[in-house]
Length: 354
Image 1 (tube, rainbow, N blue to C red):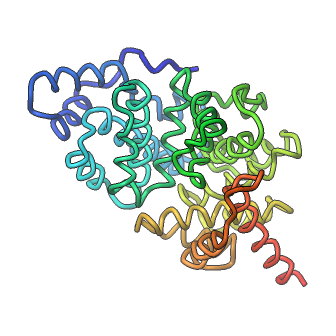
Image 2 (image 1 turned 60 degrees about the vertical axis):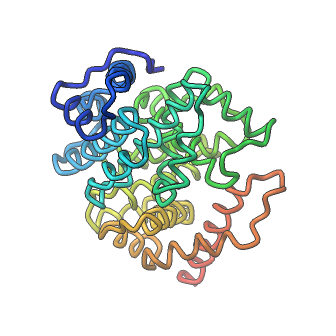
């Protein structure tokens, strides 16, 4: 696993731009910021297709996927440079609306990482969520999953707090941290977790399903949005893991985008019997973007093609599925929520094909 406490490979220009945008004025704090950047910084080269070894033959898609990764790192570096919300939030909001969610996701990782490394102050992420981060709650929790992957004790402590102490930060979307963990492992270690179909050793029970939705999202990046390669990769997994993987693919296609309408239509066909899961992922993406007020044309198009409805209606379906959601059952409320959404689209598919 990538070690978090390593020397940063940030170039000089990147360090200066982040520092000038967010740095506090007192000299001791400036030194502390520089130390955090040096120890925790991640080179933007880590978000390139060449470094990751991803498989894409489209320069246009490659540029888009790399922009997403670099925007994530922009938000991450802003957060570790200065956690003061009065400085951090305006900086994140300078990012163009289409990409802003990825910057907030990166900030979620940075704040969660600092919370994990400083036991005397562990409320940065919650303060962020209580402020502007709340509009991007889905992305912030996914970013938290990246931090859990980088901290040696991260996943174990998170699951322990969830299961034994009932301290899950959010009983519903808190599972998205496991989704983020799955994406991280697929993004950085795809040869092991995607092609090698490795089973994460630190997880148990429902955590595997949440992990696999995130792993499914990573396929969109690993295979450069190539539907044939994505489909073949999922076919190589055991049948009991495929539904969650397709859910992640639908989420990535609809939120990250990068392909034309005919490709999304082909994806809808390729999913076959997993179309309800694909649609559930698309609906999640629509809800995340509408909540954050950064709906894009590609999200609208994907919802129209995959779900046969607008992004707004898809988001409303996720809201309706929350009504009277039970939180005291053996099955997590998050999974009941997902299954309700999937059931809605399964019924719609039956009606259309009747």
